[in-house]
Amino acid sequence: MPTWKTLLCVMPLLPGTALVTACGSEEAARTAEESTLSPGDSLSPESPPTGTDSAGAVATPAWWRPAPGTRWQIQLSGKLNTSFNVPVYDVDLFDTPAATLASLKSQGRKVICYFSAGSYEDWRSDAKSFPAAALGKPLDGWPGERWLDVRATAVRDIMRTRIELARQKGCDAVDPDNVDGYSNDTGFRLTSADQLAFNRFLATEAHARGLAVGLKNDVDQVAQLVNDFDFQVNEECLQYDECDTLRPFITAGKAVFHIEYGNAALAQSVCPEANALGFDTLVKNLELDAARISCR
Image (cartoon, rainbow, N blue to C red; front, side, top):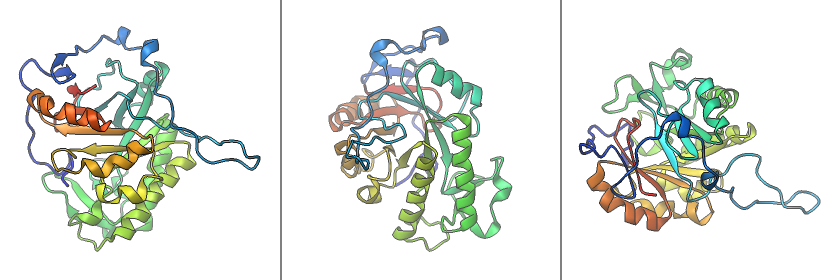
């Protein structure tokens, strides 16, 4: 299934409909002064506690676990617009200053930090750390990006360092992208078992640092991974008729942060179905700038 880094075109938003909610009603961006959450927009309650301690008391996870119904914004390009009155932001780990993360968190928001775990990007500050043997085929349409051999110890070491960076910068969660290389033409003979091992490695490293972690796409392995991850970040499951595979997250009380790429006309058809599924859906431009159409 294509992701935002494998699609080659984008449908622009219709004039005057850049910021729309509920399939067409206006949502003007609020000023920074108005961005603090009101009491009615408090963070969604965490999922029910799981497990028990040695005394038989119910034990709760040491990290955030967003529930279905958690409104959010994702922006990975352009100057970050922090004025949307939503409790969760998904932003770039490298490009977002720690001060910006601290400001968002001071307003009562949770911050998810995006990075690519399964692909090499030649513009990242740690790009020279990757051994040449771990670099595979290019990602179509994205110059400077190549698939990674996720079996390599060096790749895991770099991802561990990135997750630690997320902890140090104050992220509440991580959004590791391109974690379905085994189903793509990467240049490596990655198996389903290889991918499961790598994805569980990412989840374990995040949880060890008190961070939540989202499963990005990888729809064919949801059943095996739903217990390891705290939420799903999905791109275009409606477009590719894959949304049923994500139901285990909803059943487990975990949010599905869902994106479809298109415009306000698309939102008219997408939103009723996405809302019925219990997903937290945005219609976005492919470049994942600030513009958003929210289904809730």
